[in-house]
Image (cartoon, rainbow, N blue to C red; front, top):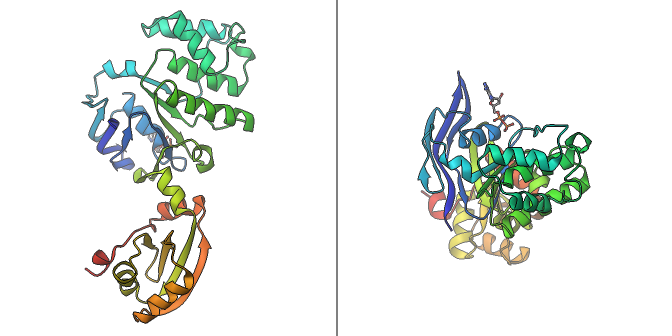
Amino acid sequence: MTEIIRTRLLSKNYGNADVLSSVNMSVQRGEIYGFLGPNGAGKSTLMKILLGLVQPTSGEIELFENRLHFDSRDHLKRIGHLIEIPAFYEKLTAIQNLELHTEYMGYYNKHAIREALEMVQLLGVENKPVKQFSLGMRQRLGIARAISTRPELLLLDEPINGLDPEGIHAMRNLFRRLRDEWGITLLISSHVLTEIEQVADKIGVINNGRLIREVSMETVRASTTDYVEITTSDTVLAAFVLEEKLKINNFRKISDHIIRIYDSGITQEALSKGLIMNDVPIESITRRHHTLEEYFFDMIKGGVEHVPSHQARA
Ligand code: ADP
């Protein structure tokens, strides 16, 4: 897979405020990248930088495998976006709004406009004035406008925010269809995990301008099943015994006293026995369930850390 977006040490300061700090982001062609972080984390700023609306303070960007220069505009033809609440000519119809936009972009194509409206399920109301549209319809029309020029990459800033359950469902289906049928790469920001966990292929977690981790949803799901938590006064020895003696690799050190083991297939009894026989001081061993929310909360706290024994002993 090729990278469609790659940033290296991308930073943005406003005065003394570090809005983005050394962000290394990687978005692969054809994936839905969920850009997750609390309000004010820096998500919109990064999207605006990609669109040339905000100038970074330092760092590099590659888009479509080419180094981006701040004054270059060529890449913009290949990107569609929905960054703010979309503004339309209220008295004009949906189709007239798209015609104006595509003419302005130098890409007027009647067929592409109808396809875009069909994709977002607004065919049937295309001749109604936009002032009659609900928020959900406006969001979808905003996406139709963004895809009417057939971009390869779509940047969507909080596209699900404020929608009702039916609108959210329609949006998720739309994202999947754009990826699967049109081959579009989507970068979708959200401050709510549940909004994007179902559609994202990969999640990038940002907090206070730092991209904490990029992780595939497959990995996240594997880590959110049951786990066994060991409390011990010697996590270094415990990590060594787990890896070298018991041949368990999928564990993480959570704190100075706690190690979590995921998906090992070993019974709790065999685990206790193995640790005790190797002189690991055990205070407790319990089986727990790690929810998706906990997984990301741990990540934001900086607590999720895999410590292979060779590093733990170093
Ligand atoms: P998010 O999209 O994750 O909610 P933003 O990128 O909008 O976050 O904002 C990140 C931080 O940058 C916020 O603290 C915001 O107040 C600040 N910020 C954004 N734009 C400006 C600006 N033009 N001048 C000063 N601070 C800004």
